[in-house]
Length: 316
Image 1 (tube, rainbow, N blue to C red):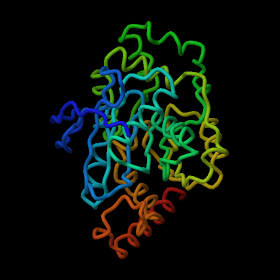
Image 2: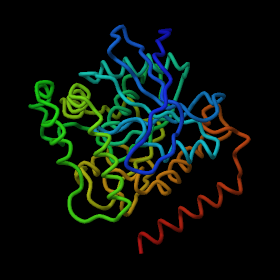
Image 3: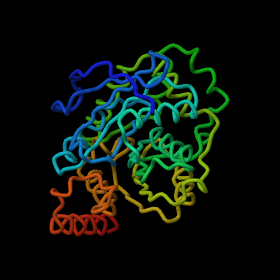
Image 4: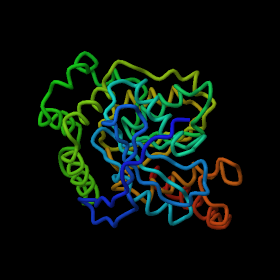
């Protein structure tokens, strides 16, 4: 097993939202290249051996999931939010992520991936299908084929572009026009996080986002999947959403009436509820992401009724 190297354990503030410190941000190296540093928040009971891991979008850092970390750990879940090192292809990323899980001594995990994070989560499940490391997937505003962005031909030139140009490309996918205050706060927060990323970080993420690749569903068809998306404007086209539904015909669907590109920020209560419903199927097994002493059957029943009622109201 690759042991890895913990660089530091320091507090990192969050910006945009008025967010409390969620935990210590750990910096870990697992590759031979000392410049590849994983940043992560690991919160909740360490006795849990199959935690939920959050993978951010192109513009995101580990702390964009602070509302999930705060809520879910309060309910007894172990959650880990990541920030990627600089990787230039999907195979390299998957190999590095596998080494990180080895370093954290995690055999199997649940993955929540947002946009690019969702694509990378699927590619990692595909990469490890012969020796599975992914117990389940929650795919938020995710896609299965990078060709939907029509930029595969420029993917290999992102490393040459200056940071301001890369940020302009990313900002072009952010919502424009009037939005409600919560969504406006979410966009401001993500713009702030985008500003914190360096040229190589952004270039590598855009390369992973647009490099010609697609998910091979037959390799991950036995993994429980929840597809989470929004009905209002987002960077994901209707065609891309439909392709995801076709790819995972047995997946649970978690639809949010509104939420834009970042529902985990501006619609966190609904997102957290859907996450709990997804993880409910693993309660009482070795793959539970929650401390067994924190599970209340009565509380879970109330949650399911609440979610059903919310879905009915949205349909009306």
